[in-house]
Length: 496
Ligand SMILES: NC(=O)C1=CN([C@@H]2O[C@H](COP(=O)(O)OP(=O)(O)OC[C@H]3O[C@@H](n4cnc5c(N)ncnc54)[C@H](OP(=O)(O)O)[C@@H]3O)[C@@H](O)[C@H]2O)[C@@H](O)CC1
Ligand SMILES: Nc1ncnc2c1ncn2[C@@H]1O[C@H](COP(=O)(O)OP(=O)(O)O)[C@@H](O)[C@H]1O
Ligand SMILES: [K+]
Image (cartoon, rainbow, N blue to C red):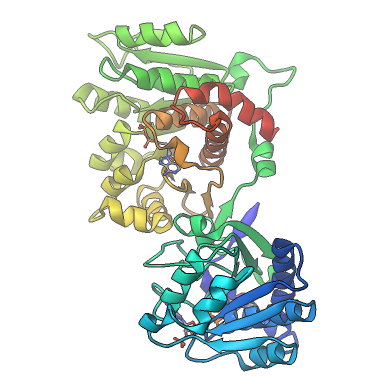
């Protein structure tokens, strides 16, 4: 598990720890870890040209002390001073180790022709110490111009604590920001390193332990790793039978959207569900049985559709491709009136946004799985762009307002549940941005719910497996939702 804490929490823990340590000790620990990571990226430190991008604060200080260590190992180190001030101790240490400092011009227009620009272009390694957790808002000038030069340079970039220009708490990026190949983060991960667009700027995230752990409370965000998901995955045993493995009720697809039913049922089947009890219109039942003959399918009686919904299920998936007509709404209400966990996706999310009490007043577990547009509908005065701009706060707000688990799909899938840390999925891939993959995801998570996983764990594990399956299915060309069927068992096997 990788844990992340908000900046305010980090600051508190930092001051508690600092009070017990000699001055500067934390920065020396951070700089040692940073220098080691830089050496790994360089492979050969001796003779390498290392350029430090140094802002006013301690983030720049970390870069300067790490540069000092690299200079002592024979690197040629230049520090481009970008801030209104510089960490004096760090700058003096670098100079005494043979490094040089170069001031960046204050005016953005002059940055491109400056000595600093020439150093950046000629570097073998760039170290981004412009701003860390003390940054606020988008990068100002001349930081922004320097970040753009770093982006255009050929050298790899190692970011100090977090890439400058990303918001540490949310991962939002307002204007230009550094794109790092490696981010070396100290004490704990920062939430913005796990959530796009910030996560997409961070590259490989390396953690340096500076002893903050005992001072830190529980995380605000978790990022599951393969071993965490392996612990959650249900495995059949000698005592298993189809009922114990989990029976999933599925009210998905319609005459108009038959594929949604085939995809969602397939997602559950290939995740190892014990049994799917499917209910739908006659034409959809035929399609589902053609593709997945192992489905226990029943045709809804047009005279009594609610009465013909299957009973004896451990969990429900409802909504994908089901439509918004009054009967679909009545069906959703009937499913939500059962005591079983319910995953409500797609059209069902839209119905819930019009009738929030359906979920708010429910005591059994509910998991909503909106994409950004659907989540915007769930929240008052919220547009899709607001959700995309701050995915973490948006999904947490929806979980609080509806009193249930919410999985926000899209670039970085995030799961929120009241009273628990949010979970960010690390395996997501833009390969999944194609019609029908969300239907498959509903089936995958439904299989985990039916097997008895709690909604937060089922959602997080489902997103992990689904993202990994997309990566496995991808052999260089585009993938479509059906490609996930064969990749899901491979993803499950890879996780173990
Ligand atoms: N926590 C820990 O345990 C440890 C933390 N450590 C390290 O300390 C770092 C935090 O250091 P910090 O507090 O000095 O802030 P930091 O990120 O360097 O930036 C502050 C300065 O940046 C500027 N600035 C702000 N916004 C800006 C913008 N949008 N655009 C441009 N400039 C902007 C502003 O400067 P000004 O405008 O005043 O010139 C402000 O004063 C942390 O990330 C980690 O690396 C480690 O050493 C060891 C243990
Ligand atoms: N840019 C992206 N990066 C990563 N995953 C994405 C991206 N765009 C979409 N996805 C994933 O693709 C799936 C799309 O689901 P959804 O929006 O419900 O589509 P559909 O209804 O067509 O199945 C989700 O799992 C979502 O997380
Ligand atoms: K930085």
